[in-house]
Each structure stands twice: as C-alpha cells, then as structure tokens.
Length: 634
Image (tube, rainbow, N blue to C red; front, side, top):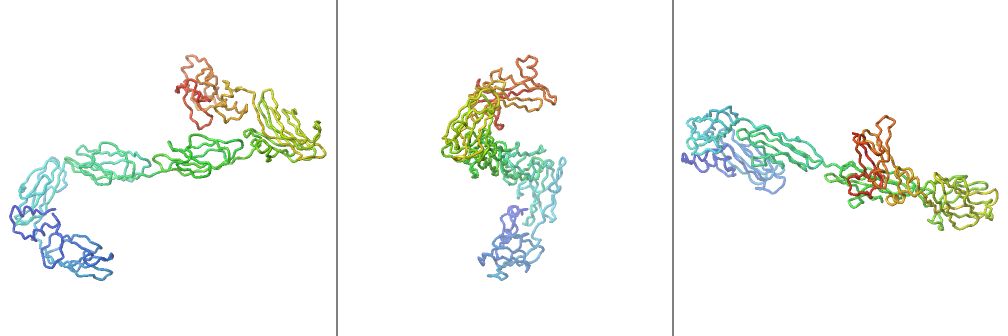
C-alpha cells in the first residue's frame, strides 16, 4: 500500500518537514534507509535497515548484528537490508555491531526513533471486500476510522491523487479495480485496494501433467482451457506468464527438459492461477544389436546377420576384436566370415544414446574339405585308422591328407558323395612297396561306387587322376590305402590333395522352371559347384502356413514369364486349410477369388527384403534370382 503523499503536498499544502515527509512515505515510494547517525527522528510504519560487515572488516567469517532496544532482530554475513516495524508507541534504539568469533570488531553504530501512531491515518475500508465476484452490479461504500478524514478514490487501477474524486457511493457492474486513500491535516493513509469481477477464469490443464518424463524429441504438449472470457498465455522457460506472454493457439512440441506454465487472463473475470508442468527429457539407449551366427563352422564360410529392435538404427561392426566406433563398417545386410573372429557391434540412431557394444565369438573348425581344396564338400575318413592332415610343401596348397599309420592287413579310407553325372579329379602320391604293376602289395586305390578306377604304389611324385562319372543320382567316392601281410617300405602311406568336382548338369532338374547353373553361379557365387547345392538353392520352397495368405518360392529366369510364375502348386495342408492352386490358365471365376504379387530377391538370406517385381521398371528383373508368388484369398 502506498501513502497518498501527493494528496498531502498538492491538495493541502501541508507544512511537513522534509525528514517527516520522507519518513511518512518510507517503503511506499523510494525506500528510506536507516543511516546510522546520532539524533532522533520519527519512525515510519516500517523501516528498511542496512547492514554490512565491510564497514569494519574484510574477514569472511564476520557477522553484522542489529539489535532494537538490546534485543537482536537480525544477524547476517556480508551486506544487505531487512525490514523492521515498530510494535507500539515509544522510543526505539537500534544498534549495529560487527562480530568475528564472538568478539566485536570496530565501533557500534546507533540510530534512535520515536513512534506515535497518531501521526498516521487509518487505511480506508472498501465494501464489498477485495476479490468479490459480482452477481450483476454492486454498490461500493468506503469508510475511514479517522474522524474527519477525506477519501479520494479511482476505479481504473491508477493511484489516487488530489485530482481523484472524493468518495461518494457508486456502483460497479464489471471487472473493476478500486483504489482509495484518506487524507487529513496534511497526513495521508495507506492506499486500500479492492478488485471485482464477474467470475473466476478456469485453471488451464496442461497435458502431459507435471512430473512427466519423455524419451524422444517432439513431445506433444497441449493446454486445455474451458474459459470463454479473456486469453490463455503460456511460457516454456519457467517464468511466470504475463498478459504479454505468447498466446496459446494449439499443441506444440518440446525436445528437451521444459517447465511449461500457463495462466488465463480474464477480461471481465479474475485471472486464473498459474498452472505448472515440469517435463523431463530422459535419454534412452538404442537397443543393443543382436548378432545371429553359428558359434563354430566348418567349410569356407559362415553367414552373420545383425539386427536391432530400434527402428531406423544404424549398426556398425568390427571383426578384429576392436570396439566399433563411427568409423567401423556399416551393416547393410548379411555377410560371411571365412575364419575365426570376434564380431563386435553397436547401434546408433537419431534421438537416442548409442547402444551397448555386443560381441560374438565365431570359431572356424578345420575340416577335411579345407585340405582337399573343397571346404564346403563333406568328407569322412575311416578304416582301421583314418586319413589325417599333414603339411606338405610339394602339395598344391601346402598340405594334404595322409593315410593313417596302419600296420599289416589294415586299411585307411576317405570317402565323399557326389551327385552325378560329372567329372572328378584329384592329385595323389604314394611312398610304399612297388609291386611292379600288380598292386597286390602295399598300395593306394580310388573307387567309384565300389569299383576301383585307379591304383598307385611305389615311390611316386604327385599324379593327377581325372575320371568321368555317368548316371544321375548319388555316387560314392573312396580313397583307400591297403597294406598286405608282410614288409613295409618308404613312408608307408598315401597322400591325396586338390579335389575337384565338375557337375555335368547345366540346369536345375527339380525346380518347376529349370534354372541354368551358369546363370545362378553368376549371381550367387557362394554356392559350391555341386548339383545338390544348386538344386536346393533354386527350389527353396516354403509356405508360411497362415491363412488366408500362402506363399511359395519359385526360382526362374524371368518373373515376367507367366509360365514360370504359375507352375508352383500349394496343396491342401493336413490341418484342412484351403488349397490354393496356381496352375494356369485361371478361369474368370477363379481369378476373381484370388490376387497375387510376384516378389524378387537377390539371395535366399532371410534378412534380405523382398522387392515387388511388378512395381519395378525392369521387364527381365535381372537384379533378382529368386521369386516368390504371394497369393491372398478374397
């Protein structure tokens, strides 16, 4: 509340002393501070008192102690101010001392005041009271406990002056701020305030609510307000909204921890309270990638796939055991490893923290095929003692398979199976007795389906054997080192290396549409040069078994060739689900019951996505080697 000093000075030409005028208005316009001097003056209703330890010392642990009539009213370090109010008429002595560790430093500052309530006018009382909600209009009355005082007032929220109207009863019918002050004999009272309105603005509702956590940028924030009078304003920097703050026009997004505050400012209604909602951004990690691979493998290679449950994440990996970083290889699809290694991977994604690093050890296990030059081909060794791997600088790849250290009347064997027809070739040599072409002493034999097609004995160098195998179906190949019942010479063994098999087939035999091997090999070089491997890769049939969608994989040269696209048939399953038949031609009635799409794929790896060939502007679809026809029942 402010003293009506302007009324005192202007309307009544009061002859107040300068000191008295300053005291009267202390704390209501520019504050009047206690200036620690001797003498006496009249106290205001409240005094602002300065204190400072710096007046006496620079010690950091000094305290300024202020007392009134010997009773401490404030103690503090450094410098500042506090407010003191007289409690009753009388004389008050204020003291200021600086203390360090209980000992006073420097002089005591003193100020003396007298206080007499008769020097102050009673504040007017306005009826109805401040904050009243009007029902229609209301009559406003004012009174002052000081007899003979004159009340001046305003109804526009401005401070009353000598030019303001003198009180007489009046009515208000809308939002109004009434201010009034009393004057008498050159004295002026505090300003009384009463604000009226036709209602109270509803409090806004902020969604999400206070204390909400969110994990990603773009968190939507909305503010609901049921009011019709006034305007809704808000802030997002934690400051209290004012009528000049942004006006809420619709939902907005936040990306970081934010304190949203909202307040409705009424035209004819009282303003709402300030509603606060603090929302905390919690950063989460990208899901740790999953490494899918066999822990060990034989053959030339094994496939490795990486996946991440976080949509849009980028995976980077290493194979040398080092932790991956932003410079590591970016994962674009399944890949192969050809030796023992440790795969390490992590994932990154915008709006996330990087994932944890995951690791997976893969061990390459030696197989007979590695030594024979055909890692992906299956070999078995047996007999009384099996063939085993030896280092041999004269062998094609620096090593060979050596027959076991058998004794008299024993054998050591190595076998494999091929799908004919085709041509088998290999290199071998012996170090044993020389039977002069009779091969009835210690010697080596090579058999095809139980028939010996090559012999070798004596001290020989590496020799090449090539044999054409006719007829379809599996053929068993066997290498055998045989010992007779007496004597041994040389190393007493046989060595085999550089195995090669060339299938005589030129195209697949089991697929609905024949696929040329040369064509398949160009696009899928990872397939070994074996009949059965080509057949299984080209055929690759499967069904997902979920009604009403059935799928079938069909290999072909061109998915636009209608004959190839429709030669697969899906029969009725044992569970009694509907049969979907693909045999052309389709009648109009049959065609109306089903739709289909032809999808293409470059490899059969399950992690590669299928592409809708019908949507690709490439009639031959040369980029795809395997095709899936997807049927949906209507």
